[in-house]
Length: 382
Image 1 (cartoon, one colour):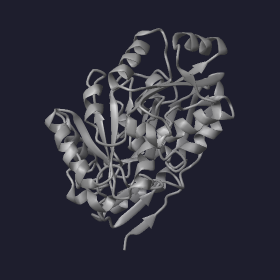
Image 2 (image 1 turned 135 degrees about the vertical axis):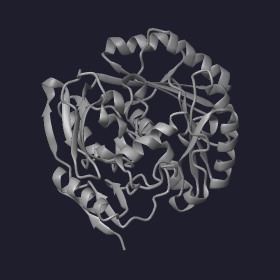
Image 3 (image 1 turned 60 degrees about the vertical axis):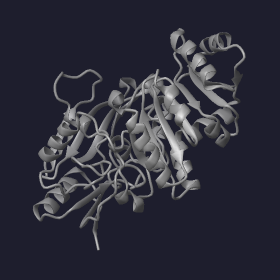
Image 4 (image 1 turned 45 degrees about the vertical axis):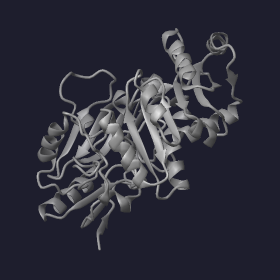
């Protein structure tokens, strides 16, 4: 039976990692472990280390638009704290009520507002991490602009805890706009939806979110056809310009819009709840390639229409695996991002890693030379 450790501070966390590694014991590292359906299969480990007790707010001055928190703080708690001062860290990740700050970074989570505010790497300005050698390393700082050079902390974003443990993170915060408004329109054909998307991207409008659902995905949210949804924030004057620039578009009532974007953020987890044997494939496409990916989607699909990332849902693992191989044959960058944990060992989750995979392996060897930390968690390959 695995030993569970819940360190209370950075030194205890670093010591727990060092002691386990010194004894050659395999380690499962996480926060609330809310994202076990994501990434690769979690190999059995002799020691489980959770950061859930590291949940302090270390520094926050609203005037500086920066905040520093420990990795075990739930992201929802951070959002509520900042909202009290009219600010936000607009990652809006899935599993929002359960994921920790460290977990959101380790899984590289971001939501619809990535269109305007960017990804975790764009909001993170500093990080403290603990290594299997028991060292505590600080990277970056508490200012938005920092000295150029290698930012070690950013290497941990998207690493699924395979390199080191995130102890704390420093973020740039953003003012919450005076008002939000959601515009939407359904189209009978994909080409018409993408033409509308292109007009928006070429216009002076700068929406916070711009998402597109295929008919199966739209039906899950109570709509028909290809649904293009736009979220904008700003003054009433700014929002009225959107109304003028988007003739024929509907405006969602505020409460309905809040629920709509919540379901968009939780698109993949909601599918897994409905289909316990289901999978979700993520395809990283270009704006031009989005049409081909959505046209080939066999089930409910959601696209970040302003960036090209697409999530396609499948009711079972076999169909997801078959479709992912097809995607790879088209040179699409596809991974099975969500799958039942007990099925992952039999699946090829990442059929075609990119040219930088060799560098990833070297980083793993540098941080964790004996491969004790979260073995196989990076889509079964690291």
